Length: 167
Length: 134
Image: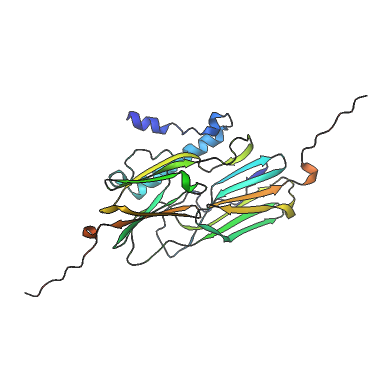
């Protein structure tokens, strides 16, 4: 319960630390976090067993798509404005972790903001992969702000067609 | 408030899961809008968009941004186990109350981020007035 309470504290951005915060921004963030949580609960009430096990749902982590074909598993994440050099991808024990940092453009400048809706700062997301993947055969591309990670399945994990012998 | 959104948020602001893949959904992109001494700058997250799919219109003080995104890969062999974000086109309209030099509006798209710079009209730019000594 303690950890959960911690997560309810609105995430503090560097911008807020610099004193550029306005109350409506943190309120908007909290609201979007609550919406996000609510959406996830409706969509996937047993999500914890399958998806994010890190308990970081309320901090910034990219939403992902996870698709499976016969030969591979594809994970895509929307990371607009993130420099591919700042993204780290790890596969350990069939858990894929995407982490990194989204740097703020021209951060040094103090500016008069009218809207702040985009996410900034460190992000982290882990997901359990559905079947045995070969951690040596991982391919990642970043195009138009979308990260696509393709993981080949190990031969023994690939679907096989079983022929029924005539008795 | 110098720039404000005018279009009713009939498209839910939050992305929701695509239940009907054949329908191309429309999403409202997350934006940052800030003011610099000589320009208004709008930054929008439009992951998946390509420059040829972006359409920006400025008409009577209304700035409309649209960006086309190709739908998800859909074939019989692909099975989605998680679909947390929606894929579809982006559209959002803002009213810009600042006097903007429309002919000098520039836009760039980089890593799924659209940046639109709207230089302020000469008349409203801050000017430094030199005080003459007697």
